[in-house]
Image (cartoon, rainbow, N blue to C red; front, side, top):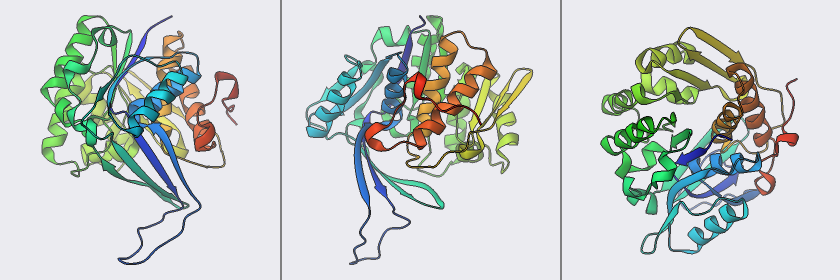
Length: 306
């Protein structure tokens, strides 16, 4: 069995539903649910992988508070132990996700311990895996630029394949941020942005055209996650489009992270690209149809293509 590692942001997610907008100053709005879960992009991908029977090595950090303890307990219950550092004097990172019918998610994030997550916290065995996912890049300021470049070079030297999901740039995709990602992409085997991130990185409105441009820059494979439209993937000399099955949406937060986990799982099991993309799309669609209390499916629970 191929070894999989995930390196990135491990934090608490507070998911608010429905929340179409913040109430005006002095006002109060009641919502139906506020769910708490161990998450972050790295945590989501790792938990999704664990439910598929492939518990990865996870490198991240939490604070020494009750949120940090909650995350470590959730990870341990999923069979993921040993790679998440605890910073006793720091608060655990928290993201509040606002969801509502008819609008995309939006987020407020307290970095907390994420701000201190450095390259020295990443165990050597994590970098020696066959498949290594870097994610949550813009929430990890101490890893941006040269530190991530150095970690990727170490994965390359060990013979691993690099998967990269930068997540959203909170500064709005300045030219500096675009150049920063462009310097990393030649080391990346599989780049995994959402359609919004692909547009932000390139300035191109059509996500398919943006995918082609990102593939030209990287030289590797680029997979654009298109939400309810599925995904499109461009590699050297090939192209794949996979539609998403129709589902009743319950909670979209973490769907893209689950896609990443499903893709690595399928490839690690020897699947060819069309099959791996279908499994990842089906997994993400299954995740958005489930509640926070029962988030990640087993392989047998993944919904079929329709």
